[in-house]
Length: 308
Image (cartoon, rainbow, N blue to C red; front, top):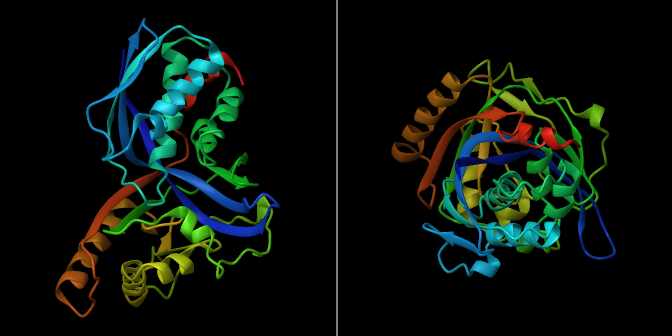
């Protein structure tokens, strides 16, 4: 049995849409990094070949649509193993937030069952399986902060500064296909090369001298703000407070980077006071977290024993 196996959330520190393929898939450039907000999965070996997810599950989600179950069955078919598994998931990463919770759960399932079933697939083999489940799955198996290109599946390791982040989520969620299909989406952002990525710069004119301004933009942000009034209201409130917020993925979570957790916690308390008691009105209730960035996935070393 493997117990309490972590599946971390991710942030897109920037997200540029640089083109579109003939098949409709968008060409992206982004830097992914992980954060210490986790789902947790438990895996119990079964000899009968059955794949069963028990306990907490997403409401109304059939097993065949569950990325965890799909990942397990994909590895089972590919490896030819006769084993199965009972899987339990403790969900802490919200869905429809741009944090990659479903993709991370799928990646952790592939890595954990690769170990539990002793199928001994390499990192690259698991990444090749992962992309069949979703474009964000491979980066979690890649296991390092990464500069991503293509549809998000061409990855190079990149160093990301050790930052803390204030995450803010309105009640609404965002359907990713709706954002990518919008006619107003920028699809011709000028491409960059990996050495252009500067991480962040300090903002001397900010209220706090350790406020951080990130590299690049998120081209999906303006579309999400147009699509959902609650997202736009939150973004405007953060801008009015001179917080350098950015949306991750297709939203709806915004994150504000800081040099240390103490400052992030202070700003979290400050944001609570302002939004609840002063002039800013956000239409929906907010959920907030303070998290640390992670350059290395917690399960990264699980694959090195099998080689890359």
